[in-house]
Length: 450
Image (cartoon, rainbow, N blue to C red; front, side, top):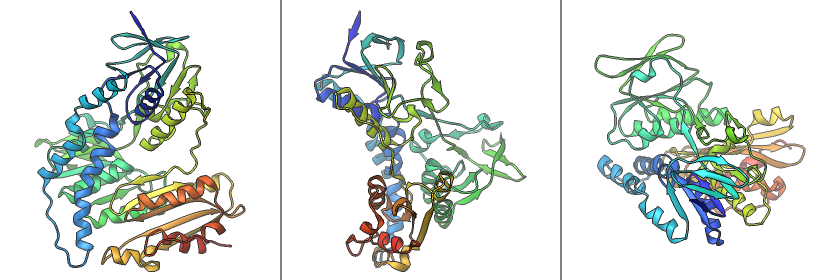
């Protein structure tokens, strides 16, 4: 028997949940198919557990810098138990029940598209709908290093679900997972080595931000090596891993954390058989997040930007289009935040990207501790930097980055300015609360070349 719906959502991470919830609230008959847990990677193995783990060591570091406070102890069992509570002990039964109460049909299992006009989905049951939304997410990419399969390798899943703190960890990569989990592990007492083959951490960001993050990690005791590639791995008699490096030298560790990116989950869906092309970076969508007539995609499956907030944004775009409110996606001014200590945040273009586009730019960078009062009321030994990039000809902000406490919160001022093309003379006429880190924008913007 074929079950008919108004829409079928395949994958229930943040993007899929956004679509399903909005369609159900509008009275549409919706079926969702999820092969793992409702909530997706973010809720169980990425954003939520990693931020829950990062916070206790951050509190201890903040206490060290606050005058007249004692340094709190870290209780690993307490940290681990709270992490487990935050991921609901990887039990999504309440989420399933919640969607069913909204009238959503929840199907657990693998989904495969078997027909179109209308779309048909096989998932242990035969489902059909005129609209299908792909929200299948992505999986961690393990680098093709010879011998790596012979040693203990973690991805973000094992790292955020860890039950014990290993004595030593070799991290391959220099992006978000590498930096965040590297800092957590070193602060919890592990010996940590970060091996990044590129010239700086956070390879897609301004090199100055990558260098500032590396400095913060080194201050915590991590060994950060850039321009370093892993050539081969081998297992020793005691079970530890040895990584042989290009150019000579070795690194040994109990565990290897592979943090070298992610790949979209698009295989096995039957897309190619139905004439839907799939690229290396995922399925291609238009500015409405549409793949083909009646077929839509959101989140990591699109390869647009592998960020939870982008997936949720795309989910809102798709839901509006399916509900008759035409909407087009605009990725201008999407913030990018690493929840390190201090937080690393960026938005918009880097100077290198602006040069590639042929833009004439102005750049200014300030030491927040030399310009503002807030860092000193926050800590007795503060750190913080802010960089801004402007379009010289049009007088608008193009990009910004910051490494400072709570930068993930106040980077949104720059994000809004970039997205709405607010003239810089209007930004410098604004009034920021004193004392805050947001005051730094005025100082930095006034340092731009006229």
